[in-house]
Amino acid sequence: MQNYRLALKLFIIFILIILLFIPQASLMGLVSERASWRSEAYSSIEQSWPGSQTLAGPVLVIPYTLTVNLKETITEKDGTSREVVKAQKIDKRLIMIPKQLDIQSALDSETRSRGIYAVPIYNSNLQVSGSFETQALVDLLNEHKNDQLQLYSPYLSVLVRDQRGIAAPPNLIWNQQNLAFNPGTNLPNATAGMHAKLPEFSTVTAQIFKFNFDLKLRGMSSMNFALLAENSELGLVADWAHPKFTGELLPEERTINDQGFTAHWRASSFSYNVSAALEQCSANQCDALLNRSVGFDLLQPVDVYQQSERSIKYAVLFILLTFVVLIMFELLKQLRIHPIQYFLVGLALTVFYLLLISLSEHIDFGWAYLIAALASTSLLTLYFGAILHSRQLGLLLGSGLLSLYTVLYVILQAEDNALLMGSLLIFAVLAALMLATRHLDWYALTANALPQAKLNRPEPESDTPPSA
Image (tube, rainbow, N blue to C red; front, side):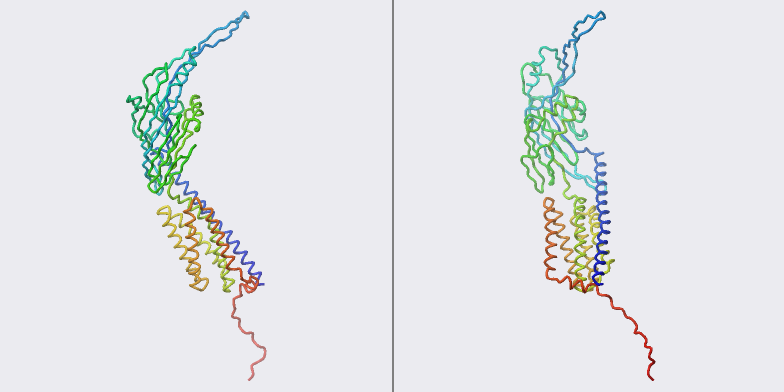
C-alpha cells in the first residue's frame, strides 16, 4: 500500500513537470515576440537612417555603339532570291575594373534608440585609391577593327546599397585632375551610388590612370565591400568591440579588443571571381556587383533575448533537480510535501525567467540576472524552510539553487563553449546525485515512505455498564 502511494505521487509529480512545460513554452514565445518587436524598431530607425551598406567599385564604364553588317536573304515574288546587307546598331558598355584598389576605412559607431530598443549606427570615413589600365579598350578596338564602333564619353561609377548613406558628394582626383561626382551610378538596375564624367583619353595604346577620393558613408548594423579589382586591399579600423566578419573571404589579419577592432583583407580577381559579376552587369543586371562582398556586422555586446532563450532551455534541469531533492528529503526525513507545494515551487522557478526577460530590457543583463536570481532564490529559501520544517534545510537548498544560477550565468557568457559547459554541468549534477545516494537502501526507504498522518479518533463506547 505504501509503495502504491509513492508510485501515485511520483506519477502526479511527473504530470506536474509536464504541466510546467506550458509556461516554459509561453516564455519561449514571449522571447520570440519581443525579438520581433525589436526588429520592427530596427526597421523604424532604418526609415530615418541609412540601412546596411555595401560599397562596390569604382568601375570604369565606356559606352559604345557597335554597327555590324548582317547578311539577309530575301526571296522575290518571282521566286528568285538575293542577299542584302543590313547595318545593325548594338548599344553596349565596356566595364573595366581597377588594376589595383586600396580601401582604408575608419568607422565611428554609436547607438540610436527607439523605445527600449537600441541599434548600432556608424559613420565610415573611406579613403579609396587605385589605378586603371585601358588595355581592355585597346583589345576591344582591335577585335572590331573591321566594324564600325563609336565610343561615347567614359565615366567612373561607384555603387552603394543605400543612397542616403552618402553624407556629402566627394571630389574625384583622376590623374591629378579634380572632378565632381554626380548622384546615381548611370548603370542599369543599380541606381544607388554616384558617377563622375571623365575626360577623353587615347585609344591607340593602353594607358594607366590613377585615382583617389574620400567618401563619408553612413549606415546601420553592417558594412560590406565588393572588391571589384584585379588586386584589392582593404583595411578597417573601428571602435566597435563586437564584430562578426561575414562575406566571401575572412580577413587575413584581425585584432579585437575592448576599444574596437582592426581587420585587413587581400583579394584578387581570381580568388574573388569578379568576372561573373561583370558579365551580369553587361547583361543589364548591375545590381549583381553588390552581391559578392566581404565585411562585418556590428553585433550587440549582449543579446538579451538570445541569452534569455538559452537560459530558458535549462529550466527543465532546474525543475527536475529541485523536485528530485525534495523527493529525497521526503524519503530521508519522513516528511510529507503536497503536490500543490511541488507545483508552487515549479512556478517560482519559472517566474525567474519572466523576471529576467522583463528586467533585461531596461537594465544591464548582468544586473537583471542577479536581481531575478536573488528574488527567486529568496522566495524559495523561505518556502523550503517552511515546507521542510527546518531553516537550515531551507538555507541549504537556497544556497544550492543560487550556486546553480551562478553556474548558469557563466555558461550564458561563454558563447563559444556554452554547449560544452552545459553538458559538463548536467554530468556533474548527475554524478553528484549518484555519488550522494550510492549507499542508500532504496527498498527500505520506499517501504517506510509517506507515513500516514496520525488521526485523533474517539475511544469506542463499552457496552458494559459502569460498576457502581
